[in-house]
Image: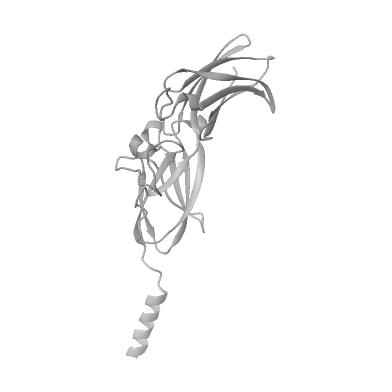
Length: 243
């Protein structure tokens, strides 16, 4: 009887689900060709999901600074450690009972909604094995944040656009992100038809581009402002409706 009881207990221990283990995760979002996305542009929205079930494991926002410019922009070698303690991040502890394939969705920057985009990444996470070494779970956010304003006089439209990296890093004539690398264009569209386009010139630091475009005809239309870094290919777009 005793032997059968012991055997039964041993079997139950073998088939019982493993206790969940706290597992630390650090997520960082870095702007393409730039620095970390944090408080300066409102941070990036973070959602962690279990791939198998779609269950949300955690939600949050990256908080903190953009990081050390020289450490980030001058980094070399394979997988360099570029994040210092004050670099923007989202930190969470997940309780996992088994190795789990996790989907990470990043959306931002929250403070630049006209230019916000989303990216996804996946990785296996093992209970009790933290994802904190080096830069943590690092995801690159491509794009440029563009904030356009317009004023009209007859059919002439003055367009002014503030262009910056997704981290809020400034575009200037002689800084790490030279204004000469960027081509900014405004175009007027009605439905799927482009009616007119014109380049916007760099007029003031940081990142202000301006120019005029003439409406070919009256009617409802949208203005798209597109910025491209000719050296890296990084680009962004924002839309504004004509009044």
